[in-house]
Length: 499
Ligand code: NAP
Image 1: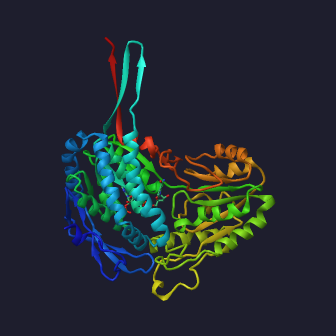
Image 2 (image 1 turned 90 degrees about the horizontal axis):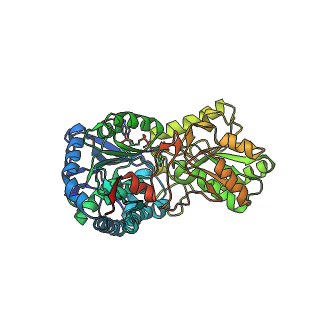
């Protein structure tokens, strides 16, 4: 059944003329929604409908949770090493189909194919491989004390509800599924309704490799129906949510009465701090990448660029040139740097911020509207040229709220203290970067930034062993490496008195 319903399934190129019905995956079988209602999925680049997904409701979620609960005893009884072997099987199967993953991700999100290949497809395989290997090397702690030994045992939490956004669909889903499974939990996943395709491909792959029925389940649909049922469900033990801060607050409220273990990876408004002694040749491409990768639709993007006064004019001139040199257009062209925004609604939101910036006295130095020369076939897509805005107060809404598109604001600073005051003047606290040739200064400024992650002279340089997460309104908890193993398990201490 998987082959019939769950994405094109054949080798590239993907046929976008055909509209596919994607299905839920519950208890090892693919199912249409019990409501028999569907949601259309559109290509962001063309505006053409490319698939329909189930508009699932409570009945579908309840069936998936029951299946996950039923599968839990056998799955949780396996050893870490046995479950790691399953992760490797999934990684191998995903790797075999990585070109298909990249094409579906590019089609469904509007992102450039090269980015989908090098980041989304590659990282999804890495996530499974990494957690398989990591758990094999994981040695639970023991603590000797006078007259006794303490043994820390990591038990599965139970049924894990995993809710993911549209910007890095399979990358983020696999980042949750792999550690959840390897620690012995069973899963009900709810991908974004906007970008369901690669999630569906993962369900197909999991079905193909023969993971026991009910260990992994997936329910498509809207957040207010499927997501909220999952977060309030009395038989779901853990929620890992990645998405916007406003939704995160709803998830926290909804899951609190049943005391679920909760991880929230939320929005960001990250500062890029450029010091006068930065190496321009390395910094400018780095800052442009941090601002605009994936059309600026990455929670870690540096959307506020703080530049030391003495280099402001020269730096800004070169920043504009570098930004304008990016190739925007056909996402399937390997030379393309920037694709389309995920939806017409999101484009309207991002464009609204550009209008607001102008009302607030900002000057659009480049971009601000649909890029020129977009081919006819993309006329109904969601396009916006990379946009640089100058002249706004660091306290303006555009400088403090998450825009989540290809829009950056520029702000001068005259001292480290002022740079930090501006960087820390938002409710968010996810990430940031500092660019300087003085590494001591870089480290000092990095430690002053109130976020969960800071890069010095680089950005989005990720080691999967390190903690990932935000502070303030950017999230609660950490995932990554041992933080993921710890989140997806209950650490239980057993103290054995010596004879
Ligand atoms: P979103 O609107 O918050 O949606 C995220 C997920 O939550 C989607 O699957 C959505 O379903 C679901 N959802 C919506 N309402 C819900 C509810 N009441 N209960 C439970 N689930 C619900 O976020 P988005 O627009 O997809 O993604 C962009 C946001 O994600 C940005 O703010 C970005 O910064 C953040 N993000 C954070 C990280 C991080 O690691 N910190 C990484 C990536 C993205 P539907 O979409 O299907 O309705």
